[in-house]
Amino acid sequence: MKEDLKIFNEYYEKYNNSEYGTYMKYDHTFKVIDYAKEIAKSLNLSEEDIDLASRCALWHDIARFNQWKEYKTFNDYHSFDHGKEGTILLNELGIKNDIIEKSTYYHNKYKINDSLDDRTKLFCNITRDADKIAIIVDHKIECSDKELILTDDIINCFKEHKQLKNEYVIENSTFHCLLRLIAFIFDLNFQKSFKIIKEQDLINKKFDLVLNKFDDERVKELREICNEYINEGCI
Image (tube, rainbow, N blue to C red; front, side, top):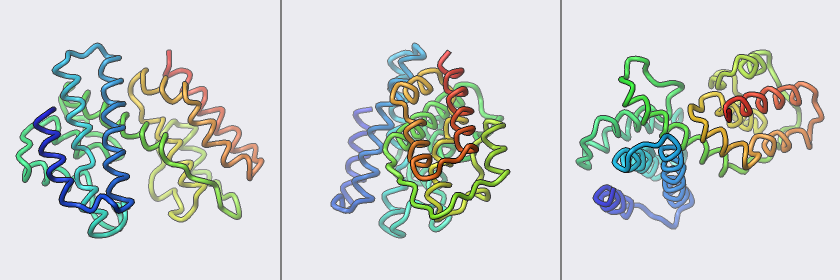
């Protein structure tokens, strides 16, 4: 990890860390590392594998810095696939590790490839969980929509315990952004991940942002679905 940190920080120094997007992603990276360590330790992995989980977390968002510099956005649809671009950067920086590469590539995909071997899947899933937890914790999204648009497609995703597909989400809707964030829980893989979410009461806090503005029974039902799912994941 020490050598990786040296390479990472040397790369980061090329960017303007006074810009919001740059320092925000730097901070995010190290929060993901902390969560990845927590998850890895909860799985009783070896010190070597805990270190590997930390390295996967360190590199997962490496393409974000250039994305912000070039496009001033973290929206892949308006710039580039930062997971795919990250694997290119890993090669350029001399990080030769297939698990780190796969974890970087798949961390932002809707799902990982079933053909991956179990060990690679493990580290991909640790990275994905840690990333999602950090995003849920850090995003302070207020619900500012003037009307509540809740489609059957979105409701069915929650009932079927699935993440929201991009085509179901209105891009400029803060309500939909909150729902997409909440639905990250349906892709969590480890008991520790669910416990972190539950201990901080993160999902109820997100739903409160909506229900404080729209007292809607359908939204309350979605919250019940999520709380039941989290409770089951903690067992």
